[in-house]
Image (cartoon, rainbow, N blue to C red; front, side, top):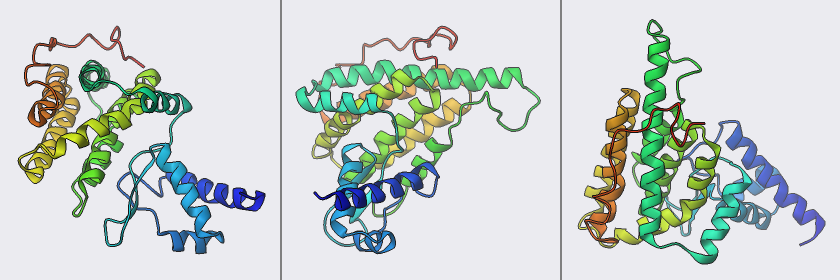
Length: 272
């Protein structure tokens, strides 16, 4: 690759990242086509392809080949730090057993959901007369945005599951604990891989995807209702239920894990 080609690739990458960070592109959006980006930025299509490959490796976009409304690159995440990239490399290098991934998700994600609900409750107790959220209230706007993106017509199974994983990561991001965020982000490819592997075992993908959407909305509703116990149990049922349905793990594997009320936010394991 020549210096000029390298700079052209960097121009494309910087342009897309700037749109992501500036909110002009968001999860669920599709990138313009290669030809349009190349024309707009005055670079070759090979430079566009190189930039998109990098974004895909970083977990920011998911690409589908072919033609039609589902082809091209869809945004599935926003830019994050380098720690998660290193963990993704570790996961790719050695892989982890599905049971270990599920157990880790149950520990982290039930605690995240419970802490978010605790934070909503604390903000309401501190400011009972305020009609609108303030800076002490968790920002759940991206979670809402991703749920809306999952309702779009024409999503492929892969696109839906990529947005599904992004929703779970967005809850961790709203909680604010950088170690949890990096861990969830680093495990994202492994999570998507195991979840995708289970699709072939489902009796009906439309029925399951509709149920998953409903469960996501229930989790978010429990958080917004400041109900830590419900948020905790709904996440547990959501994650373990899918793995039981797909028979990737025995149905009883995770039913005995603790589902006690969460630790209060001020001493909890994911307090940011």
